[in-house]
Length: 488
Image 1 (cartoon, rainbow, N blue to C red):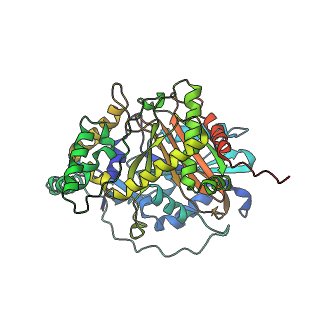
Image 2 (image 1 turned 60 degrees about the vertical axis):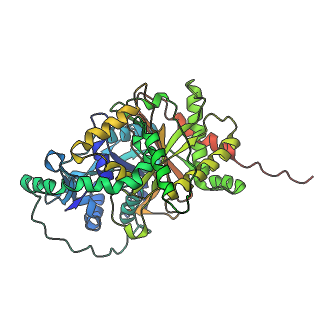
Image 3 (image 1 turned 90 degrees about the horizontal axis):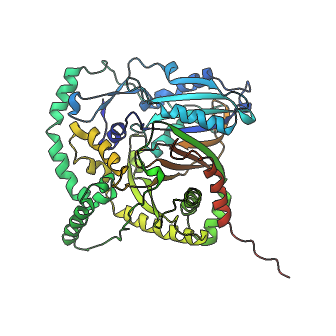
């Protein structure tokens, strides 16, 4: 048995009839590189049958502690049924991008069955250009961005013919899932640990309370500043890291969300992004965030709701160390940075973005790696789910203010061709999560010279989401270096 952390549990706690806690990826595959020229569910069952032994989380099933006395546990599912998790469907002709995006949105809007391991895989046929799509859907309680990439690294190969697999770790004998009485006993034994966890969390969590989702609670900023001053008094160096004071304005995608989603996807050239970053001595991430800012600004202008102040983006940052590779679960902190949608000049936006992200990195280095976990320890497990949902609901309703306006996440990926069951991976578009108060998520993953974008939004809040893909390209074009004039 393996107990979930408070951060893992938070992704379970946020689930309601309107919001889910799973993430995914839309892999576009070229089946012409397979021996038979097509990719079928039987091929994926065979691949997963070989590799699931190397991926313990794919067999984990959730077991709750009665009355929520402690965080839940993962146990090995003794009735694991691979055929249940792998599904197959086809798009009607012509199988275009809009149809595929609609199908992905509908699949991702459905919750996962908590009585089984929390993942599904869909093979989608009939996609234009002779491609086959593979949609993976895994609960965020199981993986974060880096551990999700580790799972894909096990499923993907460098050659169409596959590779020799390392032997799986010896299976630990299982006596079946624990019963209610055993779980109740575990909960009662763990209950006295709650005050100790809270006390240990105080020094790191209180001075940084405004860096968490609890920043919408009355007095959170005041408590953080007071605790920070006390902490600095006790430090010999008195080091102070500059904080950005940000108040997110409210937009139409910062209200309560519906159960329905929109998903759109597209690509940009990584070389073109690098040309911009090299021109100014910045980073790829600086340019990506500036490009996203330009596209969001365009949407706000089109809908006549451009705020005078910058938006505030949530940017997940991994704190997973090399020693923690292969441990799965969540090791992240949630940083915030301004999006200068209120700045009209594209180059000025880029420069300001670079400065803001530099400050965010300095702040990140000063934050404790376990900030999210420590902040969650202020809430007793028995009321954790209700408190987590109430915090997000508070930020989505007037006269409150959102914690963040949207999510922007940039995940570096491999720059060599990869294959899945012999089919060449053409693109891998992330599919992420939205919540009350934060109904827009832009996630990008680099792969083989391209940036693969996946954008998720509430279906009603942003009905014209496909325009964002075109506007991303236009925002990059505005930043492209001007070629030097030829000598006369």
